[in-house]
Length: 196
Image (tube, rainbow, N blue to C red; front, top):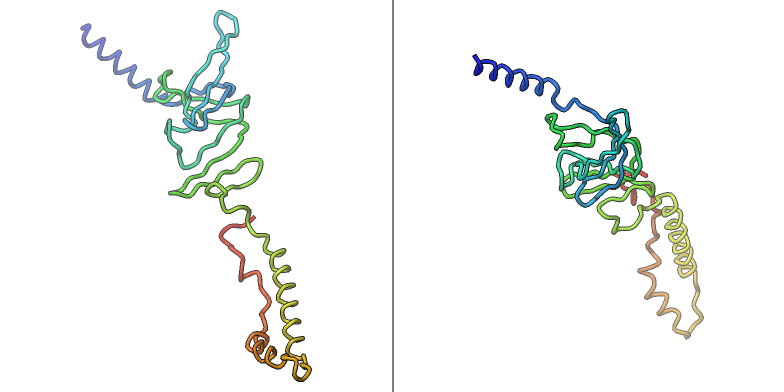
């Protein structure tokens, strides 16, 4: 009979674990964040014998993948409130579930990475500098094109003084000034896949 009792006890324990799997949520506070390991330290207040005692969970994964970047990772702010849960109801396997404040969000798809923080959006490390402000660039290009076309019109209408070599210069420039520049449009330089 004791074997049956032990088997029943283990079966009920296993059933209880399955029914409450990852359902224990605890409120805490983020103490610090390790962005390299994608982990954080969480402080929780535990009530022992009527006294509030601080307890710490170290190396809590920001996502299930400890030590590597998941496709979307929220980097929490220090001192932000959070919820942690325990995978498979194992107190040795805490997992960050939710935070109320973030310093940044990392989104990785293939070899493309987007970092969003208070300073803005950075694609793939930002080595190509900022995005073009299309309307400003179109205005500057159109001013240059207009000045260039006016210069060509001046050269085209220029009447050289005899015997000063100007006729040869005008002939040499004729292939250049005969072609006018077309004004730039937004569609010529705008990348509509990334909007700001």
